[in-house]
Length: 183
Image (cartoon, rainbow, N blue to C red; front, side, top):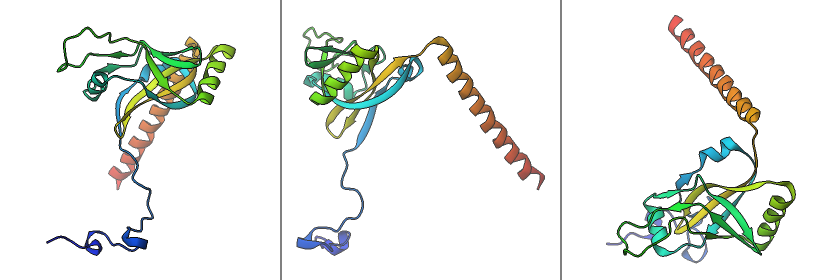
């Protein structure tokens, strides 16, 4: 026999709908690829989430994780934004037609975002770099960052800070273990 609404979790709201106080059902996010090198080579000032205009076989290939965004960058032509040098390996179980894995793909952004990003790129010499490719529900999303290229001394400074943080954590961790051993 079927279970009643009360047994399933309580139907307390109006018209037999559940009374939920937590967040509504948000789509599941599954990260496919991240560009760790971008955070090392660029100082990321802002990030934007955008969609991608893809073909069906490209989506299937991305689901398999056969994508590389490390060499990608955004370019602006007219009133549109495109991502270039993003490598999506052709789908293995698809047809055998010739498919360019590095083809230029359109970024789906709002008009104000495109104008803002293109203005920043032209005006200040900033770059738009892909940071993360992920599925948000059934849709493929690309997180792009507006960044300024780091100089060599900036990279060295970041590495020194990271090493110092790691040394401090290591010292506090071993100090805590020593006090437990003495007791």
